[in-house]
Length: 393
Image (cartoon, rainbow, N blue to C red):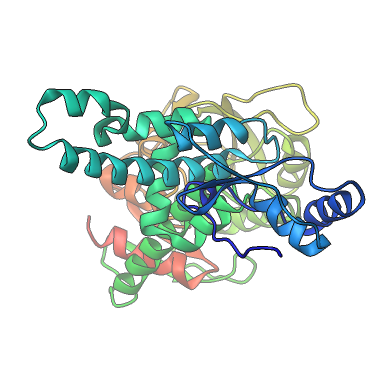
């Protein structure tokens, strides 16, 4: 007669087999019998849950052995140490369960040790809750940092934690999802405030399409960062053609672009306006290598085109951003970087247009330098975020 047994909390630190892996175990036990024992502790299965389930499925009587060692947790950790099917997130989740177990035992230790002097605490010091995380991380084979990340997910993002614990998502990707969601929530909050903001005499932002928009004035400069994906490349040609209409005589168009499509973009833009110069925009931090190119870019090209003979001030052609900023738009540039461009090329009082204004960073730089600013964007949220930010200056 097969006895029905529960699983011990220590054993439940590790995930059970599923799908084909479990089916193969059932088949193996049905054909060869149960070759390893089921270990019992405190009346519950400490190790061998999968073998126990498979034995029941196969109708095989399991062999039960009582665990009599001093450290049941160490026994289970050792028994599962070679499980290569577990990802780092699963191991961290296991570590969290181990830590909780140790914390509970640590509390029991402290309770039992009251009145017993130092000897009791010393004898049970391996269950001290103070160093439980360190020991649990080591037992699970992960760093304390990873444990901390996954522990925070468990507290604040239970759905993502379950995906990490099941191996469907890595801790890094889960953390990234949280950051992106919080950014989106913050953007929506700012956009809601910006929807009610009225433009001032120093700036204006419209929801509009670059193909059809008619500006209220001519501009000294167009400074912009169009989208880089291949499907958006034709917009560079449109931008160059419209810049002829929008710029004052002698005005300058400055467009940031990716290295990968530089030749295509240059050809598209040269058809609509006169090439003037190329600048270098230094980007901070480690950058990813370009697909299909053995190169890691440390700067972005700033293509400059003039409407006739450029009449502005002389400038150096290397500009720099001190950090990345994506809080207000997924493709956004930093205020420091855009200010470096604006302040070293433009004069206070001049008018700047950004026809891909996104979260309005070019406008912030313009106002900070004492320039006037107009911007357009095709998305409502971007327009309202830009309005909220510009309204603060």
